[in-house]
Amino acid sequence: MKPPRFLLAIALCAAPSVIAQEYKIQMQRPAKEGQRFELSCRLQETHRISAAFAGRTTPEHKTNFVAELDALIEVLETDSKARITKASCTISNCVRVENQNKRELLPVKAVVLASAGKGNAQFQVNGKSVDPETGRILAEGMQLIDETTTEEIFGTEGPKKVG
Image (cartoon, rainbow, N blue to C red; front, side, top):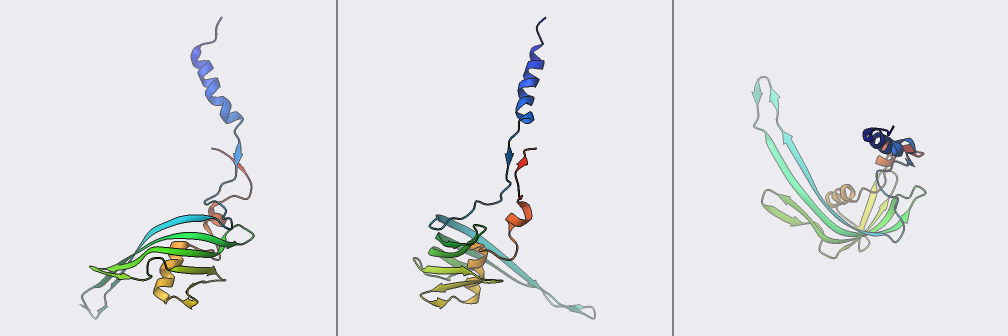
C-alpha cells in the first residue's frame, strides 16, 4: 500500500523545522573600520505650548520643523562591540525647514568629524564644534553609541532557533 501524497508533503514541510538552524539575533550589522555607507534621514520635531490658569487659556503656540540629512559616512574607529566610536561624515545635504523657510545647517561637501563620548557625541568641522542644533540633528541621524543600544535591548547573546 502506498502512503498518501499529503502525508509525504507534510513530512517534507516539517523536516526543515526539525533540523532548524540557529541564528544570532542582531538588529544591525557590526561596523568595521574603513567601512563606508550612505546615510539619508529626515527628522521631524513638533512643539506645542499652551497655558491655562483660573479658567483662562492662551492660544496654542505650535512650532514644527523638519531636518534633512544626507551624507557619506566612513567608519574611522569602533569599540570592542563593533559599534562606531569615530566617523567621518561628508555632507551632501543638511538643512532645516520650518514653515516655508529652508536654512542650510552645513554646506555641501563639508566634512564632519564625529566622535562618541560617554553620554554625548562631539561633532567638528575644520576643528571647530558645530552649533548645538546641528549637533543634535547629526547625533540623531548618525546614532553613534550611547549608554544602551538597540542591540543590547533586542539582540541575543547566543544563537536561537527560528520560530
